[in-house]
Image 1 (cartoon, rainbow, N blue to C red):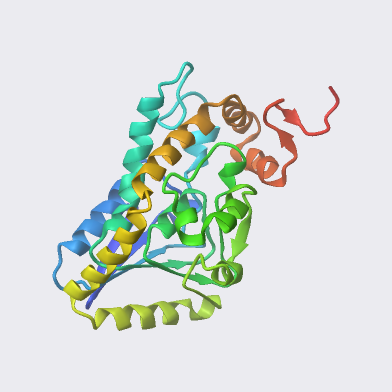
Image 2: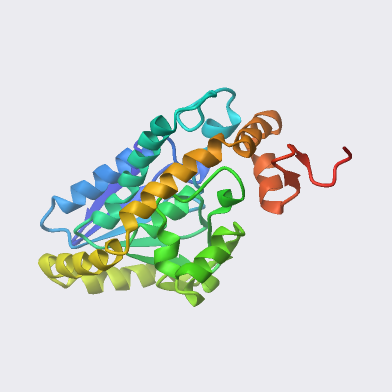
Length: 285
């Protein structure tokens, strides 16, 4: 089954993440298929705007931890020790660049977020041009607590340093209402109104010539890129590899193998496990 769906609807291209049984978790195929759909939209002179969404209960729940964390042994995201940082960087930089196809797209991209856009799923959403969220949806990058650094680095460019630090030094998730309040997204609406809101925005953009849309997006993106976006992403992608191969990161991987990734994530997000000492916090010595 195709893991990313493409449909053209008049002047609107609709791209849909399509692994609903695992909340559209990112596997080895999704980044490639996503970028291919973006390229398809950009090659069509009749497409003016892209709407990006997710099938099932969530937009995207991040990387598939069953494959990358819980399954025993090494995988493309976790090497045997001693690890090669450049091998990891090449793998994650490729994924980052594929997510950034949304940012580089000559057609503006509206992300329609329901359920969750967390961890790597937030990377995808934040590479879009505008985000409309359901009020009860959640966005965040919880792996900053252990085992991750957001490789696209979009948090700081969307929020500024103070609020980016609030998100990335806590690993908190926030709902759509708060995401709108702090300026992370364009708008939050009740879930039953999200389709209508996105369609209204997409139709408004679709009435503008493609070249006008392209010029405005390139101009705004250039301002962000001149702030060092590429260099920041290089550092973030290197750091992401380090987080997964640090002692704490390897302890998280082993914990996920031993007790399941869901339990390891619960302990990570609740702050009940000491990943350096590799034991529950306040456990007897």
